[in-house]
Length: 101
Image 1 (cartoon, rainbow, N blue to C red):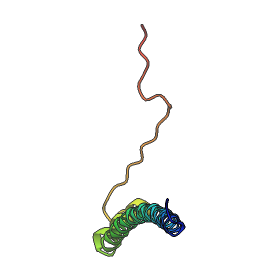
Image 2: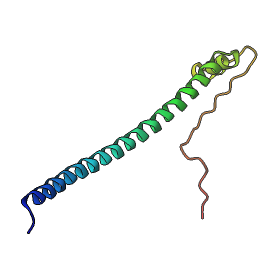
Image 3: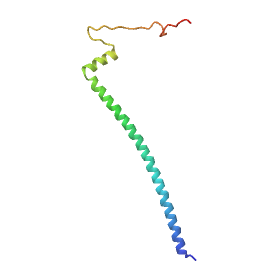
Image 4: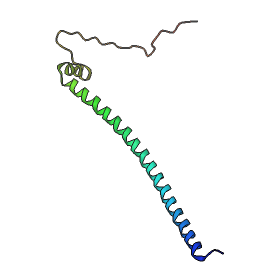
């Protein structure tokens, strides 16, 4: 017959193994969740870095004389001396005349 001492030993050992394995599984799940969040943040950071790079390039372009001239043309409808400005107006909302069948 088994001694009471061995029964208690194996019961405590089994209990400790269950507690440790449960903690291990929870920590692995937590690490996986944190890795997913980190990947999402890295993706967002990469997108923001690319946007910042494009904004810096535009800023450098608009600091040049060509950039200033383009900005004046696009935003303020200005022209250089000697240039002619043509205005195109649409009389009808139809793009093409309708053909009779």
